[in-house]
Length: 110
Length: 113
Image 1 (cartoon, rainbow over the protein chains, first blue to last red):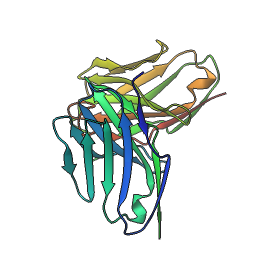
Image 2 (cartoon, each protein chain N blue to C red):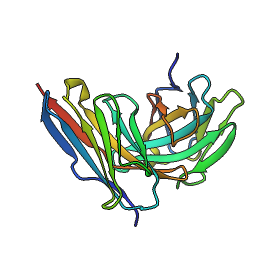
Image 3 (cartoon, one colour):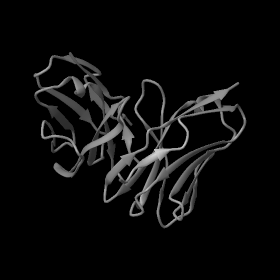
């Protein structure tokens, strides 16, 4: 069946390095994708979104890449900081039917 | 401006009871979406309300229902609670809907015993 999933459940990076969090999706009809960050004890926080008519979108220190050919979504965080430590979720949507990935826990080592 | 407010923050209920959770969206936002988050199933979409109408619904049984008032505040209700309903219930508000920047509340932690 269709699914949204993450390649790695955990990711550990050194402070100052770049982080890449990956997400695979299988519904080729999905046309909207979001990345969320969730810190312990808090609700998810919107990071960045991208529509299927784009391949790349940049925000402040973050970049989302969409590869529709292989149905792959990634989130790149530049110069990772301790405050970036959290669980990151990808989500895909088609006609407001949103499905979430399991999440990747990012740990930033000082 | 004030963020999304969910009340109560914590709730303990007994199997078979019903519960009502409340969500006050950011001022000006007309869309409120509800989600269930559990360690086993992750984050799952329950339903979305926009201008007092349910616009989308996830794959949950009819025991889960909701409504939205004219001031955009929303409530969700779960009847005949089951142990498996124990979860963090999150609401998110946005101006246009799920497919736009949404702001989440801190959630209501429901424990069913």
